[in-house]
Amino acid sequence: MPSRRHFLQQSALAAGGVLAGRASLARGPRDTPDTAALLAAAAAPVVIADRLPSVPLLIETVELLRRGRQWLVRVRADGAEGLAVVHGGILEQAYLLFTERVGPAAIGTDARAWEATLEAIYLGRGGAASNYKWQGLPFWVAVSSLEMAVLDLLGHAAGLNVTELLGDGRVRDQVAVYRASSNRDNTAEEEVARLQELVERTGARALKHKLGARMVVTDASEARDRALVPAVRAAFPDLTLYADANGSFDVAQSLTAAERLVDHGYAFFEEPVRFDHYDETVAVAAASPVPIAGGEQESSLRQFLWLIDHGAVQITQPDLFYFGGLIRSIRVARASRVAGLDCTPHISGYGLGFLYAALFAACVDNAGPYHEYKGLADDLPAQAVGGRLEPVDGVIEVPTGPGLGVAIDPDWLAGADAIASSISSP
Image (cartoon, rainbow, N blue to C red; front, side, top):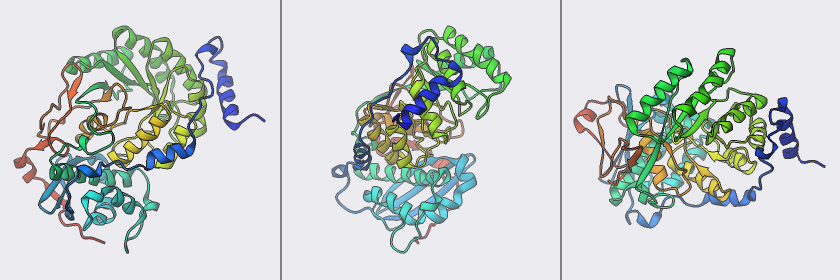
């Protein structure tokens, strides 16, 4: 009896006949590892424990701060301090998840045992209520915001950059970047000019642009797509190109777009169908002639492993904020490695997200060739410690300084307002 996966693949091939005459480019069924192997890879410790201080670091205070558009988390433990710039765009609407449910769970815990605390915050610990019913993007943004500060604290206490404490250890000192445009409401010619400006600023050797109209297709977006793809390739004949549809297409439309992309040498196609249309994602990935990237919207680790196990993506993209931080994203990277896939995280455009992406790439050996750079905000006076936050010739020098490897102007920080200056334990 034909398998369900075979049925989905055949459905994709039949959708609109878009692969007629190009069967040699279609991806056939892909062998995937045993589910148990994925689970084991994702469950292995991420923090390199023998590089941490030998004495406990009991978290005493957790603070949520804001200055202008920038939101920060600061934690203190036994004389050590950690500070992180976080995702204000989400916390501005969901900060109560941080102040009421996430931050308090860290008080009194040993920062060295963050992986256990991460699990406890989700499932509950002691007499505290569990948070599993809160799982979703806003909850995990709150968790990732706390985690970034805790990791900074651990790095400072150990005298090491976080890349030496996580994952594979520090595997590279330089990270090549790609620039991305979020425009959809301009013409193809205007978008090419925008991309040229981004390349000139940074020397990036890879670019990403949008397709579709975000979760929908219109006549205008289809006309723009047809003109844009060949125009971008003509303007950048030697660059690596990516396209992101943000779930605009159905299966047939996705495969039509994929044909256009492969004709012009694109390296991946991000989120062609809606992110929660899992069967359709599998169908597209099975038939697409260009690798499919996805996972930006995922908040469940088990669901991410399902995507890998079912061949739904060829490049995994956990968002370092949305998915809950570096630890959980490295777990996805490890499962991806078992399946022979690269893990190139998505990063939303707030705070120091691009730095966190570079730190991820510096301690994950299957991180892929290019990582997104969104630029340092003008209103955030930060500088790298032992590295460089601005790319030169398309390359960032990953900071070597302790913790996250970044210093925030103390005078600027002193002017921040406390959203929650004293978070009590549950």
